[in-house]
Image (tube, rainbow, N blue to C red; front, side):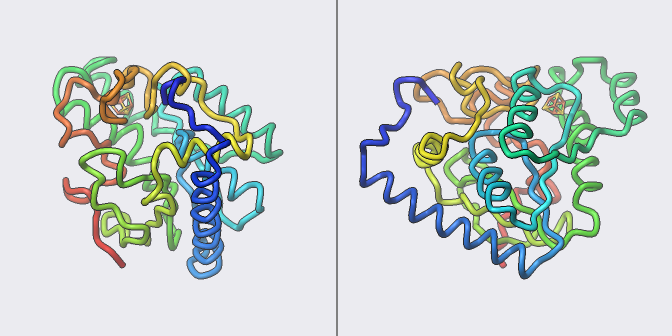
Length: 249
Ligand code: SF4
């Protein structure tokens, strides 16, 4: 988010829209917690994920929150994890990569080998994100994500409820129809902690070596894996057999 485009809370129409969407998202989370237990929320601490963190932790919903510590996250993301734990008085569950798969990746491709080819980048994402995610989702009935349809051209058909065939459980994206502006209205109105990299034009934040600031007018995911074409820009967490998972339940 650019500093000059931070939404104005005096825009009562926008605030009312966000209040209505927030009530729907909260109802969705409550229904999922009741109907699909055990449910988990995969929290990467982006702006959207802080909206869901606020709803889940403030309302004490029966939804476990976990995060994947890839070992390559920006310092600002670790700082936010600690801030959020303090703010809500909760402890986050962390899943780390297996040390042997990371060692194998580095031995095969080099410490920063993910810059050299899509194959290497996907191998790194698999070792540091996909495999730990599979462990985090094992035995769960549903998982929650902070995906929004407008985030990129690979997410434009995103549904609130879908079946994740790759992980064999229901996938819920309560913010699928939210705009970036609406996310920031929620964060400001509820004084939710957020990643300070957003103040430096990082709309989408992942691992430090694979994320950079976006230029005004660029797609919100333009700063992620910027050396690859837009269709290739998913880490595998939201892909099934190489395709974005888009099946409505
Ligand atoms: S985002 Fe980059 S550093 Fe992180 S897991 Fe993927 S390739 Fe590796």
